[in-house]
Length: 284
Image (cartoon, rainbow, N blue to C red; front, side, top):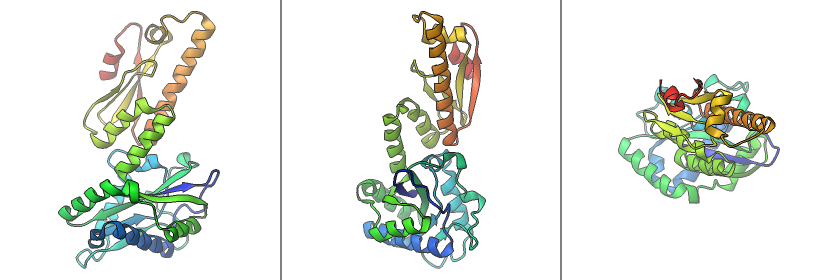
């Protein structure tokens, strides 16, 4: 599982949500050529591209839904026993984008957009190619100039850089980005949902909100003012200061919830009354 990552110029947004068949096929051909130059064995595998752009969070969701959809479409495509195939999905001839490749409107506007691609074939061959890509793609995965130019012209947006990443490379990049924007405490929860969704993960590090991931969803502790003060502001004096701090805390809860939901992780708020142990409220 990988992506073409398009870094757009500041303020730029693509004019096209997805490419029509001819452009999508041309981009898939350039993708295959560029990847095969790095790992020649890729030429023996099926390569399937979604010629539609998404926010990185949409590609980093539990169960990898964009890549799973590519696999489903690939399995239904003809020619499965006739050698390696190069297949692209995008808009139809009229420019209409099918539902599986319609990006979330609420997540548009970012400077980085990604196009998912999938390599498929004999498990041993896929594993070998995947291992090699994990080793080299982050350092050597810059798209060729004509590939970047094609993407720029086809989508209608100024592209500063175009590069190839595995989904693990993308996750590592997002972890670094979250660290730079003050969201590093939340990343282990997202990582658990992506890589070990059956496991449990806690964010229990005041002054951050209390949060538990389990059972495929995140539960955030919803404190009454008195319970919040007991846990987060026992030494703060003055009603104005307490009100501002409590409002900031509530805004932080909403921010974390929005990030989790962008990654496809459902969020519920658990009421935590009085002096009760809030961890128990999240486990009930």
